[in-house]
Image (tube, rainbow, N blue to C red; front, side, top):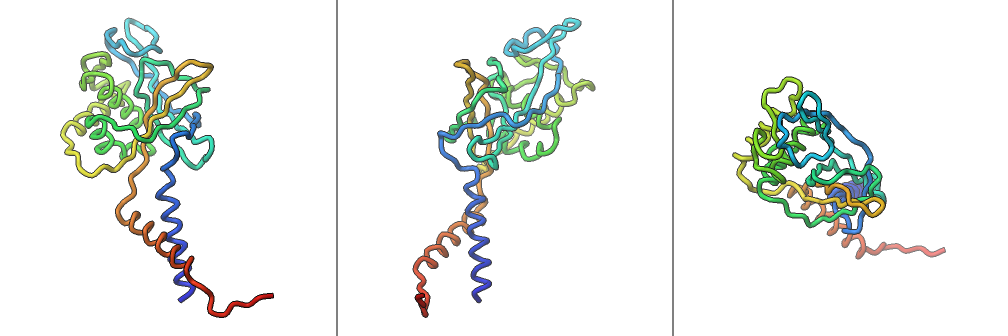
Length: 233
């Protein structure tokens, strides 16, 4: 009986730790741990909000990146972060301060709910997600017009079609249960602002919350238990 009780306690405490792994204080700071990047070609000079471009045969070339950010005080906490301020340069040396109460637009929430989970481990899908997020956060929700203008069905840039599919999925998605907590990362280096980034952590499932409550309850029981036979040296 005692062995079973101990196993339940371990499971409950572990669940509690996992539940709060993504919940930190607003003063947390993050730094860049890793970057996945790709050069994507934009087919119109009207793509005005990209600052880092080069002109080659009348075509603009942009660098699209996904940033893995690590908590400087707790390295087990990491976010795949996406830029939501493309008009600002990114500094790899910037220190980022996290804010955990960000409420995105419904369009951005639909994008995360419908497509974010499928990007795990796939760099092309992650880069496509960045293009789709830029579109919803900063442009006109259409990849073939506005400030972020692309040609679809471009064999050299498959991420563009992927992003278009994500936008279509987001447009038809019906919001219900929120599966993500949103965190923004505000960066600066030598007094100069860096890009604002957006990351998410998963909202714990109901059974996880139940396990956490059970763990806290069991901790209370343990605190009240007194050994029947106390021995003193």
